[in-house]
Image 1 (cartoon, rainbow, N blue to C red):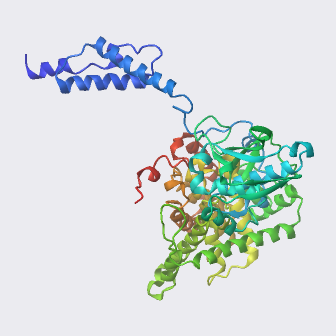
Image 2 (cartoon, helix red, strand yellow):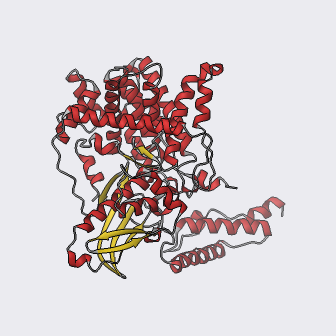
Image 3 (cartoon, helix red, strand yellow):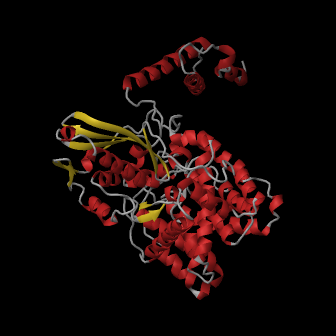
Length: 549
């Protein structure tokens, strides 16, 4: 017999051809084991009959199944990424856009809108509910507890979720909390804080915030429960969801009543049609809807937009004032915004000034976010460096764009963000970083082109390009902190926004082959298809492969 014919006897035929897969056995596990046994036979010179290989493969696959069953609890469970159809964020995607600016642009502490601002809003809401409970019920109260699930549990430590949650329980609001209060919790983790409910006063600490199951079938990847306790008994409980961008919902949530939009739209195509058919800019259409939906007048809306623009400028200025400090957490990352800014302002590097300035501004605001200082969700905390960088570059440079133009840009940018929220997601826990940096970049591109008085089609093209070139971007924060790769991604997002605006304003608009609605749908599709490990869990990617020394 030749060596070749001997080898032919050793190599197994394909399992599909020779062996039926046993009932009740995972097909993939069976085939892998069948192939591995065949490979072992080749290496050892042993001949296994097809029947013997199948029997051994079935035995091993059954053993694995039994081990998983014996492990119980969360064995074999995956990070939840599917959304419950009962969530308002799902139900409202079937009607016109109803979001307004003062819901969308929020001021609050970093480093995350979904993991910091959202949880603080949730626990503050729960605290307010508890203050309204009957006196006899409050008289039994002995404490408050918060349980974090899903992505909040998986990466909450790096996002300061427990500090934000505790701050809300003791009556702090995101827009007004002193960041030093949150910093104190880092320096004094055993510190207790008094809470008064009715006639009872009791102390709370970080130990009252429980990192519960990171894996399971939750209504939303960012699920948490708040409980008013009487010893080991629950007096009052509410389940909440931090659905992205600082937006929150709860079990049984009913959205507030709003007015009907003057120009209803659910797609960019519809928004553009309103603008073009009525000879309006994108900003004009959005302003008309803001007034109709919110009931506020133009002066009130402009005052809010001025507040947001000035807050964005302030975050950049504060971030640039830090020189080579070390950001919180185990990464020991040094800030570099001030260094990049200094080089950009050096006449030796005049040709690099524009890109260096925008990058430095984005780094500055994003580093403020990493410090846990106050930032603006545009649309999220993790992407809070992108829009402020553009606003700062437009207003604090030789361009000196007036505030009325910035207001228009913020409205155009908000429209893009509304559409992404409406038809896809703003949460990295649902869609990866494409849903945060990608959307922020698209919003910034819309802002720039609106400021330049571009027609609606050009604004759409700019936003589309910026979003398109972030599709597929995963969220894999190293050590669960919004620093690596998040901070530099804000700089790239800002620069891409400027690039997208420059391309859109210099091409023939009608020749742009991809529309924004298609790209937003692709964002949503990619989010659904993305492996849950890459959705703000720190279980894969850079978070898995980067070794911290």
